[in-house]
Length: 147
Image (tube, rainbow, N blue to C red; front, top):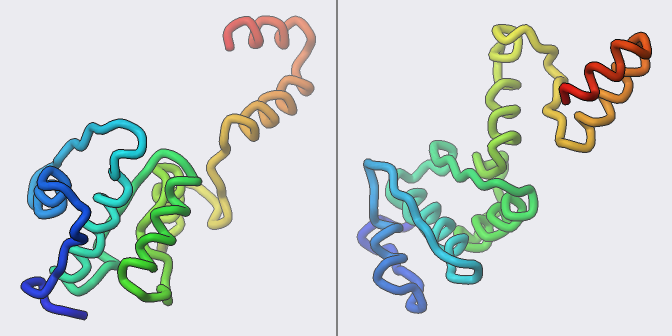
């Protein structure tokens, strides 16, 4: 990997993006509209930090959607021109949380099985539907009203 002094910022980034990339040591909130380069800024920061610390296993990049997480994963590989031999800490809040809990014995501490998963809204509704089938009808309608 190249030294941080050799890091070249893409020429199409603006000053705000470069400042966000260089900002280290404190939280930074980036607010911008659709198509303004937030993901590119984030992934260039990923590359910047990877060059600085020389260990991308220590970098965490979190997003809200699976689509964005997949895009970030692809961009990280393109930016670093590297296929990862491990899965970088890039993902959704749920994905990252699940991975952390599945590490070593974290899942045991939480009373979970190693192959547990986190349900999305569709799966959660399916589980609730299955649970409701096992309740008496009068209990069922009361619970549905509360939900």
